[in-house]
Length: 250
Image (cartoon, rainbow, N blue to C red):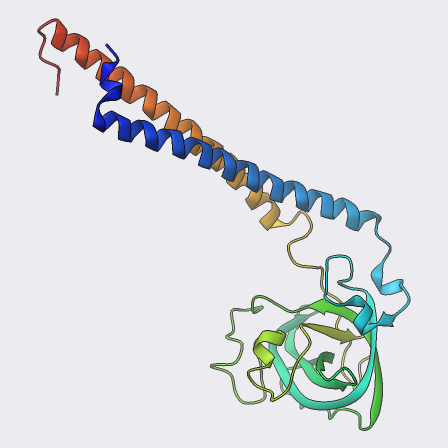
């Protein structure tokens, strides 16, 4: 009765089911591992000392930025150069801009430093002259704009949409660190910007999206299996009807 499973048509259906079910299960397990990783990261963060209270370390010792070094106090020395505004940044419920100044270090690259925040309509104060020492929270390059602003295109000259070494090298003629620092003390009347939590950590909405995707992939696997059994049962009933001389219902 089930010889039809060996026909070319059913061989194709069988192969599809045999491939689709493991893929769905694999994707479900992968999404579950992403969620579990976020849970572990949250637990580690709960037991991690406040990075803002740790002693400042040289910038080079904290690079590249990881979940462990993100938010750590970093120190760097050099001379300030080009300055940009990063618009549409909110602080304490108010909208304004970050003042981003490039710090030329002895390492040959420039470190983007957020010297502080200012409300819309206020001119950005000039950066201090001469040799400066900056201490602040180390942050990884942003991967998305806060409000969907394009990193360079569509913004007035002197503004950037996000703080990223990959985007800043397109607007400055020198190398840029793939990290940035938010200074602990604002200068020129600027309000210091607190360090942001590392991306892709903690039990935020994205974490529970991973958990939701886990369920979806397992549902897909079950649906493929269910449909295969349903099609097999319907085909078997049709084969039985034909053997009895009964015309299968369309």
